[in-house]
Image (tube, rainbow, N blue to C red; front, side, top):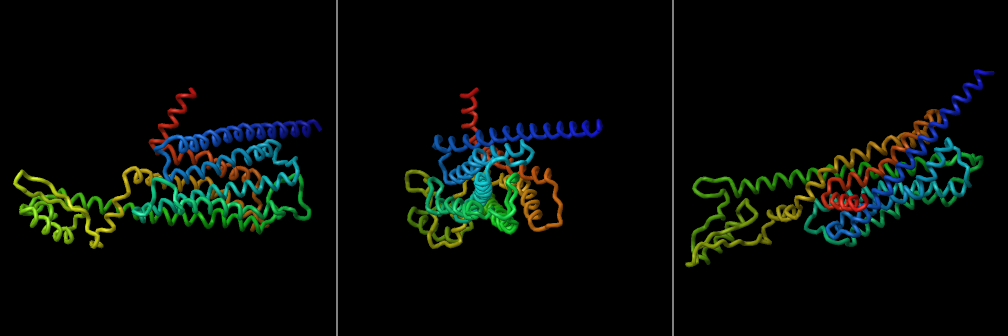
Length: 372
């Protein structure tokens, strides 16, 4: 009898320690997510240099993570603090499940939308608007939220109201819906992101190769002339030099034409724009729109994809396994851990998308100096 009382006391102490640990960690996570994503939104709204099309996608992602920290995480932390017991109304549980599915899906869809936007910027940079949001970006952002709501809406419309529902447990009751939402929220957008990023890296590599070839073309000395490009030095009369130079430009491997002519008042440089009929020059003109800042930003995409997969893959694998395999016994602590890991991604997104950006970093430093 004494031993049983001792064991019960020990178990109660362990439960209390776990509950307070979940409370402290949950509150800390909420503060980090709110502060990080609020800073992202304020920086884009107040800093002129940050008002670019890509950053509006990042603001949409930050809003999803911010709403998750305000509407979902507090109730989830409260439930974890009570040891997983739901003490509130079933209606509030359904609202919580709806917001949870919708905002997590919106966060993932926003990451996918960013990959689509970056792919477009690399593939057709001449037609990509970097200064203001156009219809394509508005369509992507709107579609992200509409699809997220479409995936989550069955819960709020009564899908969770099943016979024999346990009012002390707040969870998704329909296993078929769990499989459906997991496929729509993760197993479809994730491969799309990976494919787009691989295609983007391939495009950037081709851009680098083209740029290096262009530099070698202009700077490497060739036999009998100062440059391997025959149009770089033509010492003739102004009219003849211009006509010959235009002809040589269409046949040259170099995309830009310069001619040095003597008009009687000293040597002058004449530059000729790319010819519209030179189809071989089109890839060069398109890739020339990609600036150094964009190339540096795109190089951090492996970090973005890696962290995203690390945070969300365990949750959705456990989630769909639990729903599709009735004989699989997955302990509750495992499910709790992978759920927390997915929520942690909302705190990491501001770090990933801003720490490598000089303008974001300078704004954060300025805010921290004012606060501290």
